[in-house]
Amino acid sequence: MTHLFIGIEDAGEANLEALLGYRAVRRARPIVLRIKQESAKADTIEETLKSTTGVEVAFVFSGLGDSDLTPRIAEILSGLNVPVVLAGIVPANRREKRETLINAYHALERLEEHVNTFFIVDNERIAHLPNFEDYYSSYNRYIASCIADFLAGTSAAQGSGAVADSERHLSMPMNEVVKALSFDDGPGYVALSRASELTKGLWGYILPFLKHKPLDLRTLLRVSLEKFSVSDAPPGCEKSVTFLQVPHYYILSLIHI
View 1 (cartoon, rainbow, N blue to C red):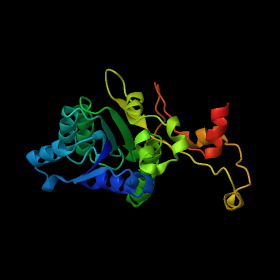
View 2: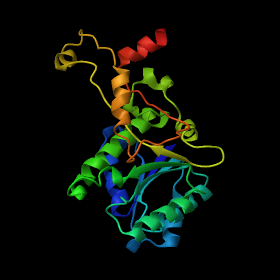
View 3: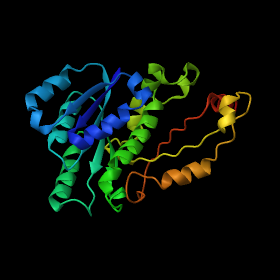
């Protein structure tokens, strides 16, 4: 089984390219498609998607105000019984035209029937910055880092050799993750965030006998809450999923508890 990654138009392709920069993601050897409106034909897209086999889940990256390709592709994938995770970029209220905003929310409504999980990437998060377009690249890398963590915590990514065999049994299968991020009667809407902390200083990584320091989980949680991919912390959250990537030393400690 493998993953299908689809980048739609410039914004979606930029997100996809940032994710493919991670070695662990490339090792999983996903099927990668890049689709643009001017070169896409309905019958060709459908034929290409139907020809892909052994796909466990499809990750679709798209700017929701860009085109009507995204709902069409999601409909084809759901018709093939392939779970769809959409990383959808919502245009910023203060920076975009009203028509673009309306198109984005209409796209969300059309996609509800076909998408299992929405990863919401809200450009409002950076819209207050001067020359905010200059921050697209770093924001794309941040979103990619969140999704890379998500992939590293699943058995599919681990099966590629990205994670040690001894840790593999602690992973969460991809289908269970998608189920955890959605609902029986509809899709889930997810705000992404991440935080990281070194468990050793520089000398600790040079001299292996130096022990790891305890993780400060409260600080990690506080930092991640400040870095959501949406402009405001989501109220009324019904679920949350956390992937904690730690050294093998911590894994052994957890096993023995």
